[in-house]
Amino acid sequence: MGRPVKDIELDGSPIRLFAFWLRDLRGSADLTLEQLARRTGYGRTTVSDAMGGVTFPSRRVTLAVVEACAGDLTRWTVFWGQVRRALDRDPASGPADLTPPPWEQLRAPTAGESGPVCPPGCLRTDLHGYYTESVDTRLRLDTRAPEAVETRVVVSTCDRLARIPLAFSVPRHTDDVGTEHGLHVSVVRGGRLQSSEHPYESYFRQELALRDPVPVGARHIYVLRLRIPSAQPMAPHFVHIPLTRSERFRLHVRFDPARPPRTVWRLNGVPTAVIYQRLPGTSPLKVNPDATVAAGFTEMKVGYGYGLRWQDA
Image 1 (cartoon, rainbow, N blue to C red):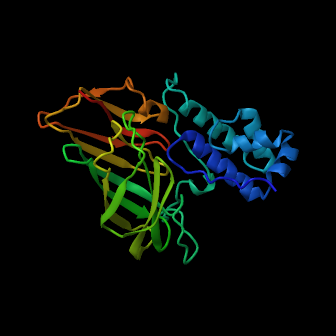
Image 2 (cartoon, rainbow, N blue to C red; image 1 turned 30 degrees about the horizontal axis):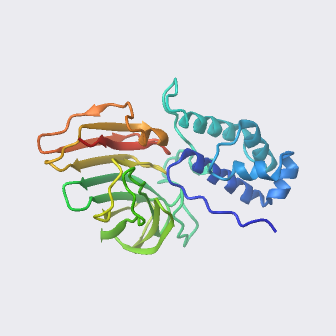
Image 3 (cartoon, helix red, strand yellow; image 1 turned 180 degrees about the vertical axis):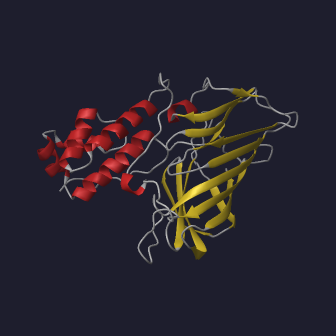
């Protein structure tokens, strides 16, 4: 018996997003790795690595897997090319949009439709469960511990939406040598937290249970407070990476007036790798006299980063 397959956490990485849906395709075809290896002519390790979320598979291996699973070769070819460009730090034609599966659920609604509708009683919250209309985040760095208050407006595309998954990535600061790494999440309004998980060091996952199920087409507002432990330094950036449709994001940061940042950069649709660069090479912003900076974003693309990065004085 083979080793159990480790779940893939969608944390904004294009490689993880690609592997997640390639693995989903294999699951839909109900093929074991051994069966898939035989059908593709590649070794079990090769096809397993293609869906591991660590390395990006070649186009040839990807299409062999897709064909073996009776997938759409044309759409997967396009998706592979989009991810390939997303991994390029400086693509010649600019960042590519990512359009992941399930493509049949992403069609434009016809007249009279409010969006994809689930079967009666469906409580799912994946790609067809809701989309994010707006995110408004106010980050305080002039307090004893970094704190963000985030207001989100979602629109239900699923009849009786009852739960919303929450995921947060908190990368470790390069100066952080502590053994503990944490994030405290609380709900100000709009639901209650359930099933808190910490799958690996930088990734935190919870679920927001709604008091009253939301009918299809209706909006729901919830507000979260995010706090980093006071002894834990925060990585010098705050970024929103849409994993599904997200229409608007606004970020307002208040720095410590006694220690304003040397430089603040606007990150507008950048690949994940650029977020972690010390000098991202994107547009710098002027810090206001009250030590605040604000930025707004629209027409955001799945899998890309939007927000601010700064360099301490």
